[in-house]
Length: 264
Image (cartoon, rainbow, N blue to C red; front, top):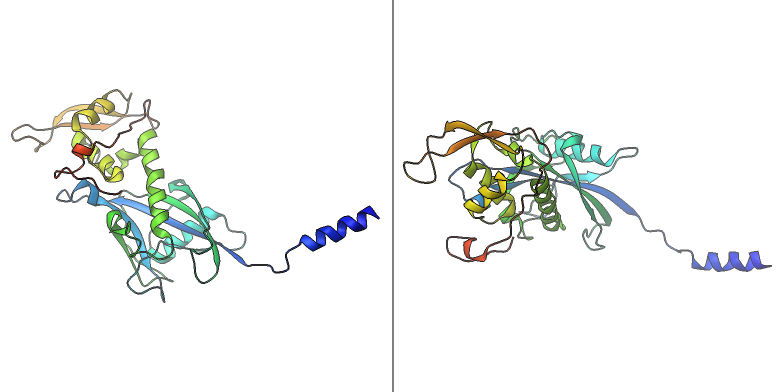
């Protein structure tokens, strides 16, 4: 008798309509434009593409549906390759999180698992299929959600936080430098991801106390931050993990030459 009553209660609570959920993978690929004439905040770029039949004038992150029996990382690699021509490896990927707002896609209920990859020297972009165009576009401009489809502006914002964490804890910033580099060149890598300026003297002090992060060389560059004063050159140390986190707080009076701050 009790079993029958329990069964009736359970069946009454069951859903009468089964909704279809689609699992996607979206990937944020960051690179740094090496053009020295650009401000550090404008050098950070994101790989985006244009979907066939997508919203006019809008970009999207490379991504798509997870295939049956396909690992999420492999979906990321496959879709980036198909839609941009760029080749990633599993070790390049760092998971950002899940994005499942009910209104993020007006076609159906879509849940996206987002990944982030840092690519210092991307190859030429050649979309293979499911893409009308692919390009690296400045992160700064893509923060405007009117340029991106769906909730992709939120995804790239979250991905930059993951990238910043890697720069704080590991030597990944060195991958954006040449084998021999100056302290200024390394600082600009950090500023690109921070999206604001940091004090050069403070940066130098923090780097100096980080064991085996960079090694000074008995060489100097042909140019420097001050006229007639060549900058010392450095090379990468052997440590992958930093002995001390390199973190910077925003200084409102040193963010921009004009003294104004901007949303990052």
